[in-house]
Length: 153
Image (tube, rainbow, N blue to C red; front, side, top):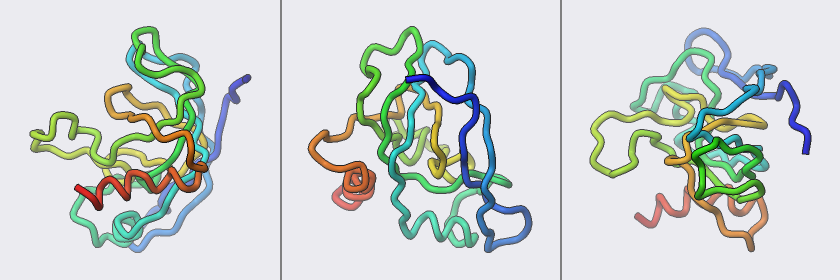
C-alpha cells in the first residue's frame, strides 16, 4: 500500500472554550524512528472525556489547536527498525495516558489534551503505548475497546 504524503485531521479551533473543530491537512512523516509505529486510523469513538476536554471541563492541560479524541481502532502501516512486537496489518490502539506505562508515573500525557489525539487518518506512536486489538470485532466495535477496558478497571 502506497502511503500518502498528507492526511486529514481535525483540530480544535483557536480561542476560548468551547472550541469547534477545523479540518486540517497534515504531513505524514517520511521516516520513522527505530521505536515508532505508523498507524492508519479506521474508527474513532467519542466519549464524555473528549467532549469535556473540548469544553474546558476536564482536568488536563489542552494545547492550542490540539487534535481531539483518545480512543480509536487502527491498522499498523509502518514500523521502525527496532519494532518487533507489531507487524504491518496488526490491529492496534494507543493508550489514553502516554506516560502511564508502568502505572506508577506521576505526570500525565493524555491524548487529545497535551498530546494530539486520534481524530485523524494517520498517527505515529512509540511502540510502548500501543496494544493489540481483537480481530473478530469490526473497526467501529473495537474502537470502543479502550473505553470498555477503562470501565472494567
